[in-house]
Structures are given as C-alpha cells and as structure tokens.
Amino acid sequence: MRMQPVLRRLDEIAAVLAARDDTVALLGLGSCGAQPARLDEHSDLDFFVIVDEGAKWRYLDRVDWLEAPAPVTYRFAHHRSGRKALYADGVFVEYLVLTAGELSRVPFSGARVVWRRPGAPVDLAHTGPPVPRPPFDTEEFHLNDALVSLYIGLHRELRGERLSAVRLIQGRAVDGAIALLRLGGGEPPYRDAFEPARRVERAYPVEVLPLASMVPGYGGNVAAARFTFEWLCRRRTVPAGIGDAIRELIRSADVRRSPERGTSTG
Image 1: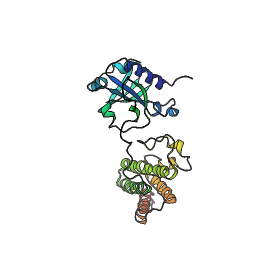
Image 2: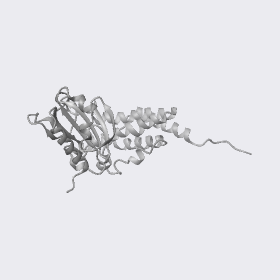
Image 3: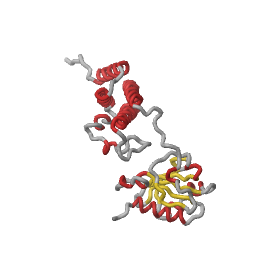
C-alpha cells in the first residue's frame, strides 16, 4: 500500500532529527497521530518537535532541518513557539517546537510518538493538561449561548454590522447547535476538541443538521437566524423572554427588508 505523502514526510523529518544531539522526540498529531483513518489527499501535517533546553530557537529560527527532505516555498510564524510552512511538493505543515517541560503545559490530544531519543520519557504522547472544555459544557449553556448569539447578531444586522452578525448568527449560534447535538447523542467519531466545525458533515446527516440553511452566507443573516431559531425551538424549550425578543427582531428585519409600498408614478 502506498504511503501517504504527509506520513512519508513525517518519517523523513524524524530521520533528520534523529541524527542530531539536541532533539528529544517527534510527535505526530491529528490524522498523522493517533487517528490515521482520517488521512486523505487534503490532509496536512501537524507535529511537535521536542528539543533540549536552549535548543528551541535553533529549530524555530532556522529551516535547515525542515528543508532537508524537500524545499520549503513558504513559511511564517503563527505562534511564539510555532510555524506553518508549505513544501514545494504541496505538503503543508504546522508545528510547535517545545522543550519537554513546555510540552507538559500544552493541551493536546491524539498524539503519536514518531521518534524519540533513547532515554526520553516514554509517555510523551500522553503528557499535558486535559484539552479545555467550554466553561459550562451543558445543554442549558449551549442553548442559551446560541439564543443570545442570535439576539445580538440580529441587532448588529439591523445596525448594518453585517459581518459581525454573520459571525454570531452563522458562526457562534451554529456552534451551539452542534454542541447540543453532541451532548444529546454522544461524541461523534474523530471530534476535534479545538474546532467544533471539523467533520460535522460526516457526523450528522443533513436532515439532522441542515447547514445550508443555517449558514447561507453574507446576505443571509435574517434567514439563517429564523431557521436556526426554529431549529432550536423544535428541540429544546426556549425561554419566553429571549424567544419573544428574537421573534420581534426577525419581524423588524423582515419589515426593513421588504420593498417600500405606496409609491406611484403618474
């Protein structure tokens, strides 16, 4: 079976690091970590490089180790300890360079030890605090957070702040809907603890999560708010105070968007 290009590149990087005396381990994450079934032609390469104290900036500021397998055409700093880069052959990578002490303070999940130096800790893939959850990961919280996002988003739409409204109505409120499905039906396979939108199309059929109606685009805030509000009302008991306020805002938006009447020419 042909090896995926990202896995081959990860092994090539591991071989480079293994030949150095200031590296400790290489951890693959995500689809290149403990969840290889997720790999496809669109997968990128996420990894952690674990290094000795004092060696960190060598691996952040220099690219000789990164370019050893293939030329790098693009690279930028996305984090104090991390970089993103694109290889000439199309492999996109995102990585952090950490000491073992820093790794113990970084939340992550689904890691796999690709290579480790003899004598390095054997539990590197399990080090770190738990992946953070929302402050109140309950159905009550996610329902009300979605409702408040619709309410504030509609006010911003009426004010003319359409982009801000998109992020609340078609973003945060939909995240709340996804969280309600998760809590009501169990953890979907390969859920991304850091990004609720990942793989939801595979986890929920369109009749359960009608995303095309929930996320119609920049000009569709009012229609999206109406649909998501009705979706929530069918599945949960919506408090009357916020529910009535949202209905009134939708009515106001409909009136504003309707064609002017009473004009004539003659």
